[in-house]
Length: 503
Ligand code: HEM
Image (tube, rainbow, N blue to C red; front, side, top):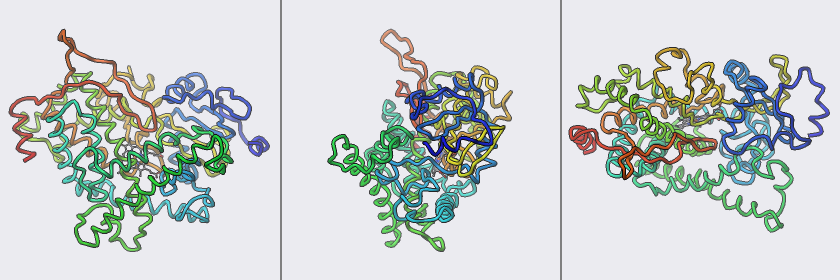
């Protein structure tokens, strides 16, 4: 903190922002829930680039997509590190998670990163991203269609059997696809062992993932307190969590490896990566474990938001269904990937879902590794950049009535605005490598749901529609809060179609 103060004679000024307190800075100004709403309000007061300080860490909230493109895309070579998550990475055993790994703390972390130079860390991180990209990139997606088709039919069947349980079915669908593609693991029940492993470790992680969310993040010396010390109860919790994080990384990978040796492993990320020249098992295990963690709640978020949007906007549902019916001879077959180019309104729905109900409203923070000056503002190395994707996607100047779900906006006035390249999946070197899987899996669910089901409100005892205003939870990944909905087969014909497809 003092060193930063000492160096405050900078070649540029600080951007404007709310006045903070000595030492703690603006920590108390940032709400713990839905902080993007506060950032969006600040943008109206302070402008597109807002400065806050969190315990001496310079932090910049970016509210304009052009600034984000410049700082996080074009200057990505030195704005692609991550904040130091001391509790998660050092105490909770998540040091294998390359998505959250800062580039400069090489002396802190376990095995792969221990005592590595900055250049070596960058190389290791690049290797993680490379094997991820090799398997999940756009041109490989058709190879994943069979798994997506199978999981989609299972999902539709489950929704038909017990539609009130749509939330669990959605989670099982999203997680199931990723475990299948990654480890060739078939999820057959919602209480699947691997899913449980991930949920247990992840639930613990999300409690601590936000920088500044615990005392240790604020005062790193506290991490050295022994577990028996009064007030150090968190150390016992984190010790248990470290074991869960390790099991999550190792158990599914070791099983897939055993299956690979016995010849029973079907093609999947692990088999593909192990077969590559110079395969590094540590890197494969890390990347594989991250696929489920990064991909399941985010993909589930899109599908849950779709159901919510159809519930509240029946005219959108009707128009979408008309479009799908046109290409499937009035719903006499299930739509499939080859129909995609004939369904522009469905693509507009997906774009609008990413805008209206953005699953990652602040993407993920990037940290700079070089002093920089931009628009006269000085950003010292170590500045955290928070892209306010929510604010950009709800900007009234760009989107009329941004709170309304209106896919037409992407066919009309905003046809040049593409949420995929504007930040729904992040920026620069860190852009989400799983986006193609997520988008294709969600697309198939959406078109097939429209063919088979009607989504409508439940009725109360007086026959009135039970509809609460759409609402979303808060967190790193955002989903609609639980809502009641009726999901029923459209007709006998639609039900027969589903039954035949499932058989
Ligand atoms: C709708 C679904 C999804 C959304 C909205 C989403 C969004 C994001 C965002 C915002 C980031 C941070 C990018 C940045 O730092 O600038 C990210 C990173 C990442 N995502 Fe996704 N994601 C989705 C699905 C997936 C899926 C299905 C997978 C796995 C197959 C995946 C794997 C990853 C990984 C590994 C990273 C870390 C990349 C890095 O740090 O270099 N994501 N995602």
